[in-house]
Structure formats: C-alpha cells, structure tokens
Length: 590
Image (cartoon, rainbow, N blue to C red; front, side, top):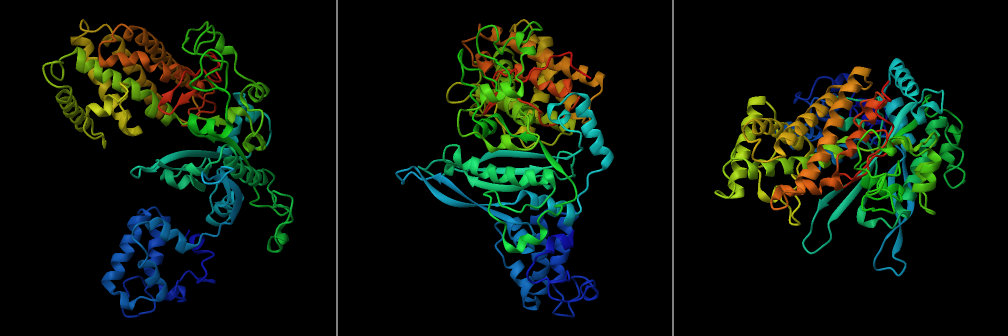
C-alpha cells in the first residue's frame, strides 16, 4: 500500500524513502536522531498508519507533526519539512496531494450558470478523476480483489430471482455502483445557501471495515453552478464513456469526441485495462438526486394527472392511488417495463447519458434506505409519536400544566437513561420544541440518521408503556405502539440479515413491513379527528407515507437485503412520497 500511495511522486524515482536513503537506512526507524538525513521515515510511518487503518488521516498527520516537533524542525530534510509545515486545516487533502496518487484526470468543458451573462451561462473547465483509471489503480496497483466464488454467487442469485440487469448477460462482471448526492456547506449572511454535489464510484461486493474506503469520489461541483440539465449531462457523458471502456476492458483509440488519443497513450491502445470486466448495476441516490439526473415526469407534488412514482402508475387519487396497500390494489401488477419507463418517464429532450451505460436497466436505480427510513419515515413517525405522548399522557408531566419545553426536557432525560441502560452510544442533542414542531406547523423530529434510529427504539419502549396505562386517553396510542414495534422489528431484521435472504427471512421482514404500512394508513385516518393538537400532523404524513415500505419490501421479494434498493420509492427530501414504485407483489419471495 505504501508503494501504491507513493507511486508517481516526483521526488521518489524508485525507492520509498523520501530523501533518497536506501531501504536499509530508512528501516532504522523514526527515532534515529543521530542522523539528520533519515527523518523522512516519519512520513513513511504516517503512510503505513493510514494504509493499515491504524488511525485516520488527520490523526496520523498530527502524530507525524508532533514527532517532528520533538526532534526539531532544524533536523528535518526538505521533503519532511515541506510536509509537516502544510496547513493544519485540511490534513486529508494535504496528505493525498503529497502522495500524488497516480490516477489520470479528465477535463470537461461544460456550461455553468452565470446570472450576469445574457445567455444565463458561461463555459468552464471541470476537473474529474477518470473512472477507468481509478479502477485500474485500485485493482492493478493497490491490489483490490473480489473473490471469484462471491462474484459468481452474486450473479447466480440475481439471475435466479430474475433481476433484469442480471438476466440480460451470462458474463459475471465485477459489479460497480454510481452514487450521487448534494450537501449543504454553509450559509453566508444575506447570500444563498452554498451547496455542493459529489459523484462517487464504488463496488457493491467490496466492503472494508471503514465505509469511507469503499467510496471513491470522481467529481464535485458547486450545485449553484448547475445550468439546467446540461452541466450534469456533460459530466455523466464522460463518466459513461469511461465506464463502458471497463465493460469492454480495452484502452480506447479515440477520446469521447472521436479524436485520436494523445501520443503518450497510443502504445496501450487495444490492451486490457485491468484484465477484468466491470458493469454498473446500481445507480444510487435519494429521490431528489434521481429526479435531478433523469428528470422524471413523475413528481412527489403530482395530483391526479401525473404519477408520484417513476416505476409504476401510482397517483394520489383514483383507483391507482398510492395509499391503497390492500392485496386487491391494481398497482401490484403494473410495474413499468423498460420501454414503458422510457416512454412515460423520460423527457422529450436532454436525456441523461446514464441511459447509455452498457447493461443499464431502470431496475438499476436504487434509493438509499437511510434517506427513505431514517431520514424520511422516522421524521414524521418519531415526531408524531412523541407529541402524542406529551399531549395525551402524563408520563412526562401533564400537558398544559407545565410548558411543552419542560415536558421535552423530562423526555430527554428518560431518553438518556434508556441509552445508558442499553449501552447505546448516541450524539442526539437535547429535545426542543423547534426540533420537533417546525415553523409551518409540521411535526417532524429531524436529526441524524443514526440518532433517529436510537430515538425510534426509545419511543417504541415508551409507546408500549403508554399502551398499558393510557390506552383510554387516546384512541391512537394502541395502534401507535404496535406500529412502532413493527417498525423496530422491521429495521432489526433488515440490519441483521445477510445479503441474500432465505424464504423465512423474507417472509418475516415482509410481514413486519406490511403491518407497519397498514397501521400507518389507519393512524392517518384516526389523526384526522385530532386537528386541535400538534400530533394531528400525523394525518399530514401522507406526503411521506409508508406505503413505500411495501415497495421497499422489494429487498425481500428478490431475497436480497441490500442497504440500497434495486428500484425505488417515490420520496421527497424528508422521506416517502407515496410510492408504490416497481411493485412486484408480496408472493414473489424466493
């Protein structure tokens, strides 16, 4: 790994010693202060710590800086001194820029938004890592490997379950996944929110202990610079071209525009890139990202004229309404074929180049379960259940006699006691009214994904206690208790399941998910009669409704408990938006 990180460094022609010392000299260790020339072993030790996952990049760089400070900066050679004198603000950036990882880059000329221009855009060069070069570096230099038996089992299981992208080929490609998402960076006073988007490449079968090690960033860009769909299409056109080369496993003779490759690359034309073949089998991201890339005709704001799902004709009203979770719903048998998907959901112009990926099928679209459940469904469920407990019971003080904030303080104390008793680490801050009740009156308990899971476990325990003592106080408490228990079991079964499920495991997950979905429907109707309290917002959660749980059961219908869905739910920023999506049917467990 040390050689892989240092390969390509301009000051290291053949030896890992950064000062030109031999391996024997540098092997004497970083604490040999009798010689002034061999203090670069500090950097070698830092690289070994990072490569071996002994410590994070930031911690390893800080240790290196502290050791050098003890020895004395006047005893360091020029390479070591340049390394430790770099800014402390972004240690990871400085570390990898010093290592010079030998991965090719590509420059894309694309239009970006420019409000000062008459046309509304300007041309800009966007830098990105070449995807095929990233894979070549990981497989040929770093030495990443996928077990042949694991790879064969992956394809055999998906073919046995009839997954469209798997049955279309008989070759066991190494699977790849593309993931994209946006994040909020900061908010400067009197200026728009600064956001950035990132596009990542990963291999679903490669799962190291550190999740960060299996996500490889290809490109990042200020989201405010995106000009219509054109900017993203330009970026994905290059990514798709590069990934299709990995499907063929041959270096190209021409660039994406048909021009001959530069002279320095002509010797490798037609030769294998890695000796293995790769195929993109998942296009990951939340609903907003999928909508941004493909520009589906369906939308979570749709009514009776447009569907709310891009994989089936689910509407807000009518016979095909997405809130119908009964066995007789016609949507279970009306999943789009690939041609129907293209015809009904794709725009008339400006199609995404992602559709040109070799072996692509709309079943490759995969939503992140973290966004769907932890950062969507649990927002409304946790908030509504907590407000119902505070209003309808006296577990945390009587509603109206003490302030709502005082009740939340008592609830938070009980939550912390639950965490200590269960030995569960959690960074959830104190409960506040603003945390649960939003300015527009919505009841959404927002927070981090893991923290929401911890809160859900605590609320499941609280609701069970309330069901025993306060069942007469509110008609919803009994159903909420069973609903939260079903959700807790559903999450536990998913988290504890292997990649491929047995028939029994699939049936258990499906049973808990459907119980939760039906109770959610019932609670929506019951909450409509409680519009005088905060918890009435449970009735408004049809916009983030849990019918998606049944569609999410695709993981059990395919017998594949992946953390990312193979198809999708209709979601919005905060969770499920109706979705029946692909909707295979509950009896398709294998």
